[in-house]
Length: 298
Image 1 (tube, rainbow, N blue to C red):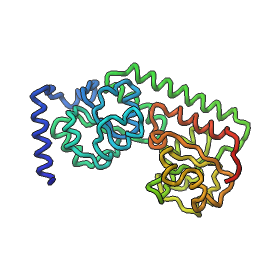
Image 2: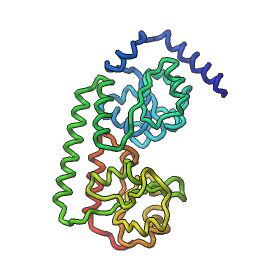
Image 3: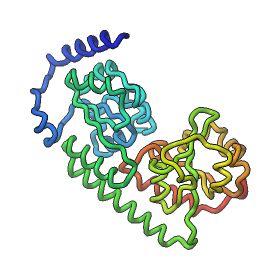
Image 4: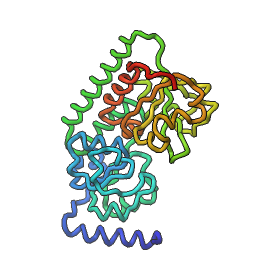
């Protein structure tokens, strides 16, 4: 479908929906300040989707992006494509009144098409910090008219992280564990999470140190870097184990096969990809892994 015909289709679809229930257009300044009570939501990005469901607004969600399917509560929702390659036709066809998206969402042209046909497009920062997580919870809570629930989520998050800090302080070994965070991009490519990533922040919050912190973002794993890092633990999203042949296959990976004594910890995919309101659960899982007895050399 050409860009012109795609736009034409979108406009016709929205026009047919508008006769049913078209809200009066709001002034831009007022819309930025007042909560938006959207009847039908599409959520883009696992942290956004997790937060919306945690706020009790899951019943309003009519569609999610592919990455949000890592959340069990979202798996029955219709898909609207990969977050960086969204389809305006698919989103409009769901009767969407509001798109709640992380800043990775795109392409930009699709977001502009959605705005042009009346969809309220809300793009939120996706910095991987606790402060940004708190702000995202509060912002979404205000827009959904669930400020009280939002404050309860923030309070629980702070309590979980306070407990994690106390647990780290009480650890008898003075040396923090070195953690190498990996995920599988296909069957033969492992990617390492460096500084500024959700996985890297997760390691820090759990009292560990990122074994590879010389760069930001994600890069392909190299055997030389693994040997030099000499990690104590390997952190992976649960879905990445199968493509590498499980823990046994991972132990045969070049580089990891030369490092002895490391142990594996897995977390839910959504916690590896983004920092949502249940971040404390993932931090606790890592700390449980640090405390677990060794299962022998690899």
